[in-house]
Image (cartoon, rainbow, N blue to C red; front, side, top):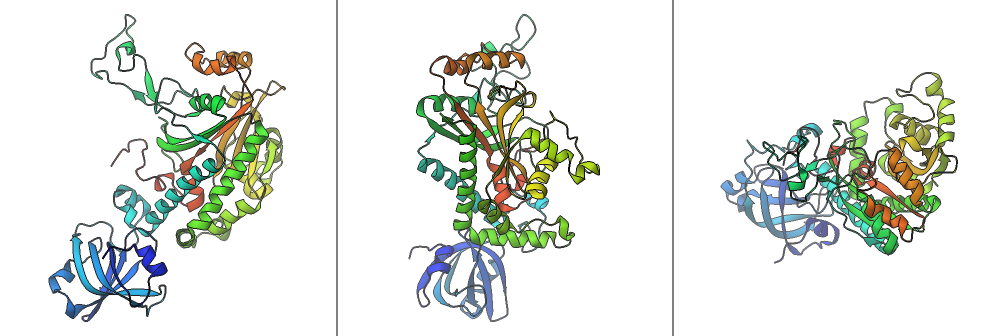
Length: 478
């Protein structure tokens, strides 16, 4: 008989039918006569209860069925006497597929801290919390591809190894095959990258945007979805050195079109999660309530499902950065000096400011536009006032900025001048500037950090808990 996934057994299994289930033991309990095994194969948050008549099985076999062991069970589905499931499996035969020494297996049936589970990230998928998170991560990745495919976008694979710095920030990981102990040097004593594998200095990409623009200015609408890297020494709950980015770029889109797309896209993904991941979301919502039950009421998070529905039912407020600064300066936290960071025109807003606008002032998602040009990247559309650019940041409750984007500067002269002001070598970016020389058009795009979206959808508090194997300063395990 072919194995049935536990999700299928619990959903469609008929009492009286014989099935084969395979999975890992979550718990085993019972008496001298009957054992109850909670079996999970990763297909669902729910376990299949296996009922074992002790007298019908070898004692040594049952002794080896411990938490973490892998087994195959053949048996008959019967109506469950317990709550929480319709059926349970009366075992007729059990095969031990893989033992798990209970003295050494770290994921025992008790509450483990998230920090402990990060140290055991190779096994944390077997917990309810992380199996839920990574099923949702799969669903969100699928939803993203589905959305853009339905919109007629082309999926473009932009390079992971690149010679350009899209953000102009310089926080990049070098890629080199040169001898680290004895690299070739130029007459000036600098490392001679002309002798390196690519014949020039290269690094891991910080963004696929620039190459994405090349695709959009021929194919019309493209999106990228891949890993990006920042050598930023930020050991926080919101930063990773390796993370995934979704970056659509669209020809003939102005800033309004860009905002419309971002709002529609986010709502689509969240609706997809509610439609397809409800069991996992409900589990994570309950987990969050338990975690915060000792906090004062005003410090607790919004219910996870309510938070997702909150985004769906509200139109995103759109307002200029300048207005946002005025709102913040007139706010109680500002007047009572409760903001940790300064609020002045020209500063880059911090998460506390963004969350105030969303959660306290407007009570809905917000898109800020027209930021000061001095705090934004070189490629953003310069506004007529000479001070601001056509940037947009989408701000969400609990998380602050979730999307950053802009209309791109299509004017060759303005773009070249801005690059020179920011010391970005125009001669090395000849290929990018060619798109402005040959058939330039109004175009726009944005970037969504996939892990930021995952934090929002799952309610997890640390970005290292929504990516399988987090890469951060002094941390490259597994």
